[in-house]
Length: 411
Image 1 (cartoon, one colour):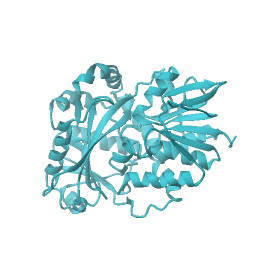
Image 2 (cartoon, rainbow, N blue to C red):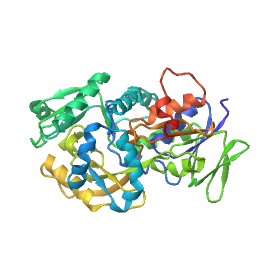
Image 3 (tube, rainbow, N blue to C red):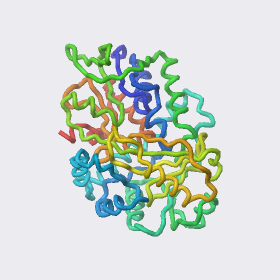
């Protein structure tokens, strides 16, 4: 079994973690990506390891808020109007998932894997030197006096699931982050959460470990999938590669391949942005998220990274200057004395309308596995998702209920 050849499409955090866990089981693994490892969403994310983040976006209270969010230039949500017609089917499915039962279903099964997220990473980190690249100072969420019902709902759901959280008042927030302007009403502190000082450097350390243990990487754009006597064949412009099994882990780009497998998975893209304020990472000691605005600030090597907003606009639209401006204004509302910003970045979060990822075998082909659709939690869930896939491929039993992550839910 263990000398099986496995191909993985996508060399972001999902692909690299899948590769390492499969390699641990003795499989021969080849990673493919059209770019160098870790240049897409795994480079530009907020850098949070957030094992508490089980409350999904498909909530009843969100439905009533959407129109106001879209109309506000400062809100967390935006639409590229030329993409609306393509987005509508996804959006209707999303609205169908915005009820109490579906919300709790998503929360429960996000919690199941989030609870295992940090220990799974520690298994991988035990083999590499990540000193100076991860900080264990917790993550702080703050909010103002609007939408307090929504904040109460989030706190209650996490309590019901048994998520550890510390509700903090104005004084406690000030003690944690004295440089924040006093715009906040309250917040929650997760003292066990961690953050990356440089997500890409961490990913490269993991990738180099994979290569040093005999893994292969090919910088090729895999744009076609075929089968040769039941074995999956990956094809680039000029070459073809036959494997025993393959894993599709290329985030927002996965749909181009799953469509070829006659599987209608309603994957779409949340476009996320970041900017940096260089040399200002000393202003805060940990990531701070402003819940009302759906964005956060993380102290990183590159400076203070401001990340956030959800924009629906597909993979081809250009950067929205309005979204960048929004990040700058939001950051300046939170902190005084920020300089000119640097680095405007746009990345793509792969998102499904029920806000659960797809982890598991393809509906139509038992030697094709999926690992994508982790929306805002791709970074946090990289290691545990890779571990789950490696257990599935080596046919090991697990006490997890993995049915909710199957693509069969869209059949």
